[in-house]
Structures are given as structure tokens and as C-alpha cells.
Amino acid sequence: AVLADRGGRELPVAARFAGGAIDVPADATLVLARDDAAQFSLRIEAHGG
Image (cartoon, rainbow, N blue to C red; front, side, top):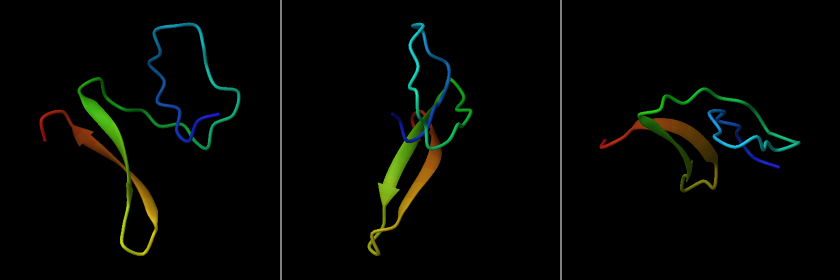
């Protein structure tokens, strides 16, 4: 199981269950963060920034 399926895999293996699917550019990273109120968020960050 995965929280977010980013696709772009190099092997023919995939999770059976995913919380969601998101397209992430090859030059970016998907970041999971938690704020002071314990709320989680996902954001896409460009490499080097």
C-alpha cells in the first residue's frame, strides 16, 4: 500500500492499494509534511528548491 502513487516506476511492480495518484514531474519531489496542528499535507517541490 502507498499513500500517493507517483507513477514513473522503473520496475513492473505497483502497490495494490493507493490513497491517491498524482503526477510528479521528473525534476520534482513529492513532500509529506505535518503542521503544528498535526495536519498532514502533500506538496510538490522542484529539485534544488
